Amino acid sequence: MRSRGINYKLVNIALIGLIIWLVVSTGNFWFSAFDKIVEIILPFAIAFTLAYVLYPFLRWMENKGVPKWLGVGIIVVIVVGFIALVISLLTPLVFNQLKGLISNIIKFVQDISGKYGLDLKNIQSYISNINTLVMDMGKYISESAINVISASISLFTMIVIAFFTAIYFLTDMDNIRNNVKNFFKKKSKKTYELVKQLDVEMKNYFIGLEKNILVQLIEYTLVFYLIGHPYYLVLGILASFSTIIPYFGGIFTNIIALITAIVVSPKLFILTAIAAIILPNIDGYFWSPKIYGKTNNIHPVITIFSVFAGGALLGMMGIVIALPVAIILSKVYKFYIKEIKKA
Image (tube, rainbow, N blue to C red; front, side):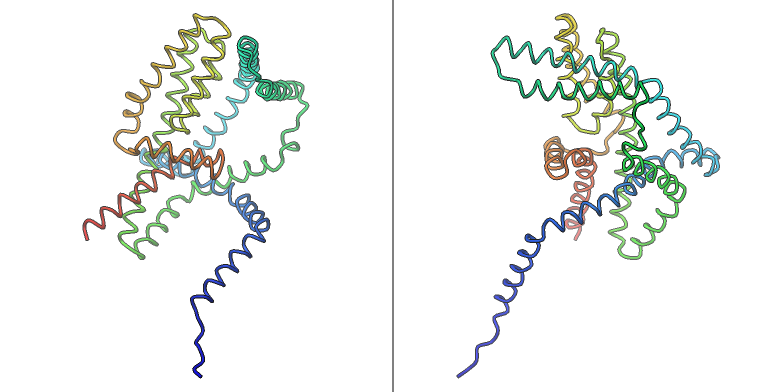
């Protein structure tokens, strides 16, 4: 009788099944290990991103004749000074406005609940908890009852590591970029060209984002102040940093502005509604084209999908990085489609 040979397909399927079973059965270990890896890498990733964002400013100063060591020092002083100024001048005002804003949201929810007979107790409880937390934080800070270093040592450590590592990355960014450039040049000219284009795209994105944050901070704060909105500063800050989240960030800010305005007076609500309609259009059709130019053109559907996908996969961090990742993937896709057509 002829002996039948080994069925390698069945063996491969069995091995794949075994691997899947092992991964699933030891899932807690892998998730724990992944979390630890992310925890270790995160401060260095933040540091590199910060250095990458600040690098064009350093290059601009070097082109003006400023030595690198002095340029890095100027950037450090500006960053530290800005953070210190914001904390010392704006923190008390922001806390007061934030407490009033949350109180008015609670009042609005209670009015809606009573007027229309809706059961919104869970929402009221959730907002009340936020309000209590904010008030407690303000109380503790005003009484110097919180030692920030001891209460949040891991966060503080991460910030310190990220800050000082960012300085080293910024100082050595020329060498890092040259090493990356030489590496990809040796590997593949096409890959090098792609990396160079991605670098330009990311530089344009971050420069545009920085300008957009500043413009929207001034724009929204000034407009809400002029129409008499009591929480103009909080709303201005929300509007500026919500630019990181395309579309939804601005919608969230305008909803908060409208809810708090309707509690104050009908007149303020109307003025806020007008501002909520006009300002996004000014941003979309005037400021954004002026700031970003013709770069980073991503289809709105892709942008919205990337924000939802990022949030579903990585939570808030995924939402924040959704647009840059979408820009990178879109550029990679267009680049290789162009190469395929050439072939």
